[in-house]
Image 1 (tube, rainbow, N blue to C red):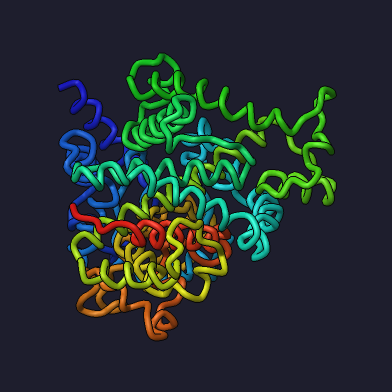
Image 2: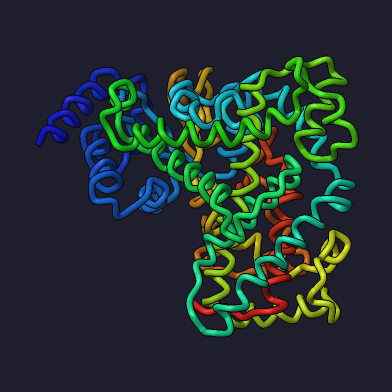
Length: 472
């Protein structure tokens, strides 16, 4: 009862504090702020039968993919868009008019800090410019592909036992360990072995997952700061506890780059071809210096980018392939051709770059229906009007949902809800620009790690299907 009283008070406050909105724009399910507040909290937080992206995917379909607005708990109006022209306007044409809102960055500060996923403006631009040195073609060929191929073979060895016995296996957990071990090696030259179940490495991932899940609760509970201050909720207590564990683990990586004088060690950077080493080397050449706290933030942002997104995509690939055995047949045939009888060898960049159209199509199509980041938001800082005719004002949120944009029938055809990798074969991929397909973001924020993710995903799929067939 107390929860509903508090929610009612917050809903009234949202109604009283709401910003200007367009009267010609539909509201969520044609209802007012009270409905939006209660319905979202009821379905997502209390009943728990839908996630936020799933809730809004259904709402977007209900509104016929037209823009609509809703009032967030706390008083700010939010516009929901899905049309590629509106997405392009948001992410490219008026790029500087929309930023990450301070309420977002504050909630994620404990995990992302001042890393690239949690900052705006010059801080974001500075990090992106420096990080661009990490993803060149030479490094993909000479270093990263070898790491991916080696760890993919580790997955094969792990799966042999359950495959022979016919027992089920949690493939998602395996993929998260695979991508975690890979990103640690290519980013920090850190030999971890969560695939083998080393407790220290598995424990870090466990803490990482706990914090991510607990931070999401902050978006559903307007009084989260009180919970944090007084440690009233289990989620805030989890954040406090697991943040300490994460910091202990990460600072071991950071400290390895410093000498006894507390300065970046030239010896540590000598010949270092890891992502962190290249970042620090580029920063040094540009006359930039960073604190240990900042490097801690960069490490965690890198782990999120390198672990979660690709692991989620690979899990989705297996789910869809289990439902489409005919595509498993095609992928198995391609894997045999790529390996050319040497299935015990680790695949390399040259093995897969021009020889894996099926694996690439499977990966891209799975990300279309199940994008690793299904929703995103920006805060408006300048009044402007979208191509759809809707005007937004400073302080309003704008939400876009790749999970919905990637399923629009006017873009992808009447079979938009169906998983069909052939969309990406025989030159058809050129029909889809980055604002129709936003799985890797778009505009200036286009994911600079896309080539890495594609290579890692293709090597994993080809290696696994050279040895196994999967069922659900």
